[in-house]
Image 1 (cartoon, rainbow, N blue to C red):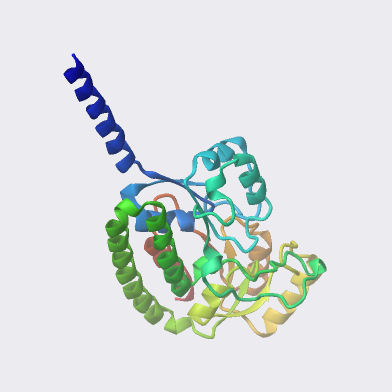
Image 2: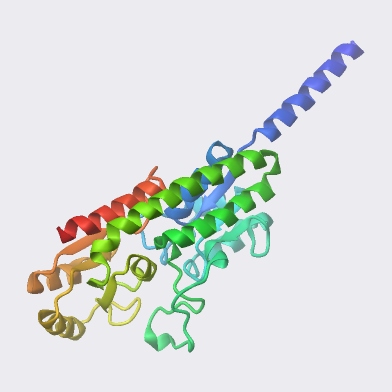
Amino acid sequence: MLHQWNKLVVFALFFAWFNLAHAEMRVLACEPEWSALAKSLGGEHLTIYTATTNQQDPHHIQARPSLIAKARRADLLICTGAELEIGWLPLLLRKSGNGNIQPGQSGHFMATDYVTLLEKPTVLDRSEGDIHSAGNPHIHLDPDRILQVATHLSRTLIKLDPSNQSDYQQKLTSFTQVWQNKISEWNKQVQSIKGKPIVVHHNSWVYFQRWSGLNQVATLELKPGIPPTTSHLSQLLSNLQQTPALMIIYARYQDSKAAHWLSQKTGIPVVALDFSPGLDETMVQWFDRLINQILETTT
């Protein structure tokens, strides 16, 4: 009887160890780009929940109860940072009560902590609109910065889940090789649009512009985060009638009225772009689609 009991204890311990060793790490990604990147780097070792979709403005999300519940159980939080989620992430963290994903902990990963940010203001003046004090947070639109983030995110996964270190390293190597090859391909594709003038709805494409060589000559918003005014659009119309732009770009979740009004008046084509990957779309697939949409507009 004792022998049988010992066998049961051993089996139970083995079963518990097996489940622990094969447990998937629970990840809460603030935006689809970090969900897609984490999936490429972690694969079957991660269970990922994404707080937003590419049809939502990541600045304006509610810390709803279902999202708080996901945060409460998360082992790793992956967000953009640099105040992009300032309107909802602090509340989400506070209400979650999850010490593992709080600032300063190993389960708290902000992508902008690992790259140099553009457009860091020298003086903070809220009258100038929605200004991010740390700099422009939309780094996921620069392929080179994505590679920097990927390296650091992989290290974080290894730190939290060292038993799968070799697999994480292999996935990072694979992602890096594919991504670098794609960067070479994309660089060739965008040669034809380097220096071309564009109009954007919001100043959120700066990293893509710097990387691709596109030249932003105007924004539909008078100031960041402030909707276009009639007088501002009239001034833009006057300027663009004299010096036309190649295209007018806006993120699909943004109001398109101003872009289409200006397009009708000037004949400049409008491009609605997905600002982040779609559901089950990889970073490579999304960036391919982004570039192809822009290039198709110019032909």
